[in-house]
Length: 421
Image 1 (cartoon, rainbow, N blue to C red):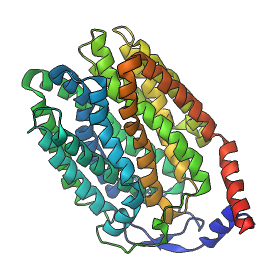
Image 2 (tube, rainbow, N blue to C red):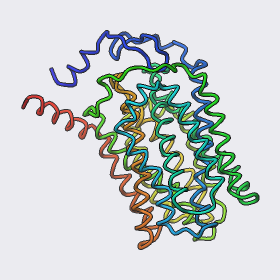
Image 3 (cartoon, helix red, strand yellow):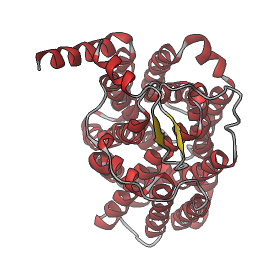
Image 4 (cartoon, rainbow, N blue to C red):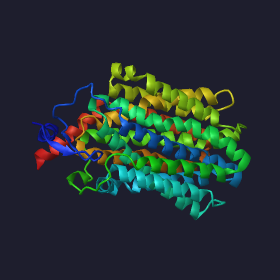
């Protein structure tokens, strides 16, 4: 029997305590619930509401690079530093994030993280320049985002049955994704007319509302740390997480440097991109489930990654006539890629590993945010178009990591290591 088979058989028929509901539920390979079980219930809808509130709050900060460029004459390197510190914190907290979530509980983690996001956003309204206070506030936002994303993904896995996991991931992502268009569409004219302090105040208010909604999420009691909080990553998850580093870099490069490049080319308004990207991503997530059913999770993730790389590279040519079409293509690829990759990561995972995997997923995606530190400095020398082209190529290349070959290689390597012992 292979190592993977042994791990699977050890959990057959076992029971565990759900960190979301604190009730005993069936183990990974025990009899699955009826496919007709009603899962779109009040707890899941409440989770969607908290995601929407947090999505609005964090999406207001997609305009931060424009604010820094227009109001503080920040260079790409300075913009990359301010945006990248966010990703640095998300990566640094990975080693203990799974343990913290298990101890606090999923609902309490979301509540505390939303509250921290509210305080950090309001802090931005009180400062007037690039410096250590701004970097510190972005670091706090990184910590808050890591908490919300990790606990939120784990709670989706708890509330949705296995056969609906891809759909549930898509809906949970769509709840915050909607705000990628709504927040910039509201915030950009508000910032232009009244100043960005009002944008940051709106962001803080949205996060506070999310914290209020999170008070009634299921499962607020503490639980003791267990063996699942170790740092060992299941072999089948390693290539997927590595691919997510590249796709995360692609997303964050697009969000960070699109506005500065558009401004260089005379485009003073960039909300058209965000609206087009969000509408198309939502359309494919809400109406494209049959695509995933036909292709399967792995092929959907591979094709989505290839398309994502193409459109990120295409942003090098952004202009008045291309910004909206590029937003549409970027959104379609994004809407296909991320739910499929997340579901692929959690499919067949030991339920006790979900919080840990969610923490790793959040961390590796935000390695992409950290990458803008280096890309920002490189852009000072080679220009922003070259950065988009380079990132797009790297993202497209990462599709290979999602193919079956790297997964089999990791499993074979672990088997050899065990046999050697």
